[in-house]
Image (tube, rainbow, N blue to C red; front, side, top):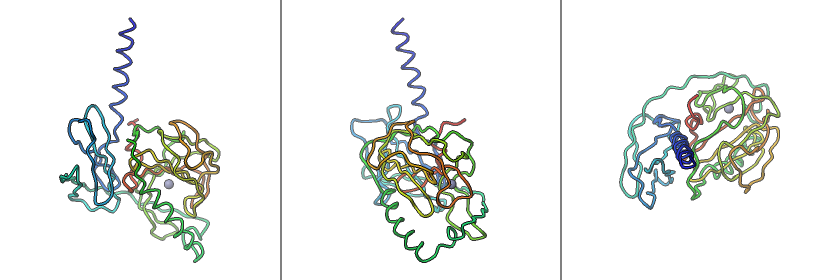
Length: 267
Ligand code: ZN
């Protein structure tokens, strides 16, 4: 009896593990999940140019997880896997347009002081996005806030009639004060107050998989702190460039923002 219960637990954990990899979506803003063959003792290494790429083990095989930048043109791109070229075909994806009106005009047309601040902050966030720590990342994410998804990843954005950067994250429609929890284990990489992103927490999940939580009303964690899946990291707010309170959730893989929905189990 004990044995069969044990077998059932094994079976269940196996079923859960089947959803551990992000979805393969080789489009701009998507992820190429590249099968590198049966898992040997040592993991292969993979690079795209100078940027190392995450390698994860699933069902006895190695997979490279390549985040594809939103501005990538359809066609072939080459990554290096343990010294040999592996080719990835990037398909077309057209993201819809979104027009927004921001009351605080400085958040759309920043003054010279704002521009200096934005430049300083960009150096900080660029360094966080380039991080590549050794430990293999957990990729079975839980949604970090309890609410409906509103603005999806990749929308081509026009603020007050002016074209701006595309929407590089996923919005969850929740009110100010609602808890935000870690989608998976990691280390808090940075906590800061940014011009566009407002109060922000970055979590490093390992091997270039970084997540960020923006526009928070409060933050409950410190840089360097270990955080577990489901642990509270702050509360929803409306700081930075927003039309109202919500969570903006960004997922970065090999220094590239990708669609967070690819890490969530299909509803
Ligand atoms: Zn957003």
